[in-house]
Amino acid sequence: MKYIVITGAASGLGLALADHALQQGYTVFGTYRKTAPSEQLSVQYPTTFFPIHLDVTNEEMIVKAVEQLEKHLDGAALSVLINNAAFIEAKPVALCSSADLLRHFNTNVVGVFSMIKHFMPLLKSDQQNGRIVNINSVAGQLPLPFHGAYAVSKSGLTMLTNMLRLEQIPAEQIQMSDIWLGSMQTEVHERNAKNAEDLSQTDYAEWAEKMKKRVTENYSKGFLPSVIAEKVFDILKKEKMRYNYLITQNRWKVKLLLLLGNRPLIYRLIRGAYFG
Image 1 (cartoon, one colour):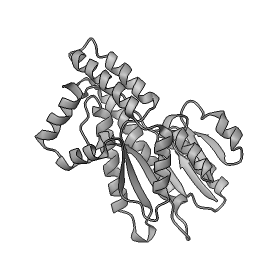
Image 2: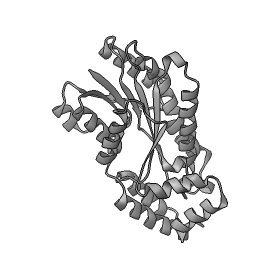
Image 3: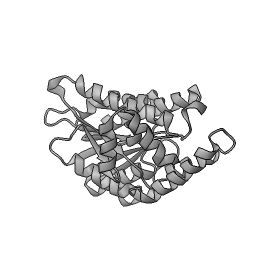
């Protein structure tokens, strides 16, 4: 029996990951913060899908979830932990408050850290250790306009994964991988477009309109969550996962930008692509 925990499983990519995991024969524990996942999964998979009310920023809830899961596993090991839950609010860094930054970090970095810290013991087994997949973003590797707080937090997630991997005791190695996602067809893009509209009365009004157009274009070209979920599970089937994977459209363009590193040219290219 294979067991998997997926955070943020109520909608979007998290729900698609849960659905695909169930089709692959996993017993799925899908967490949600507000709205429970679709009842369709519970009806279709009554013995293998278990929604768990959990806010990744609440360590007490995480501890209780671990205790609940430990009883269910009854000595078996957890096969996979997918940290998918995330928070994003698109706005210029200059208009962010300290609270905005903290909210991004609490969910996208500290929340992932807390999940890994408390679920790690369940991933360890005498036979075979489990795996951890952190759903990250291209925004954490490249400076994308109006994604400041989100980008900084996702960059922090990259380094968190790197440090956890580096500092593992060799005898207890658990494979960890960062998945860098590009555009995806979820409700997140609708919220980003709304955030751009909210900037119409600020100094960023002209750029905001162009940003809204760009967000809409990206949404129409983005992968469906089901497509990304399938790619994630293809990665999990590999005997040895790479440290990171890039799942996006125009992969060669993104890879080229990544190779440019922190050079003036990259800022000109990105600014030109978004604002003309």
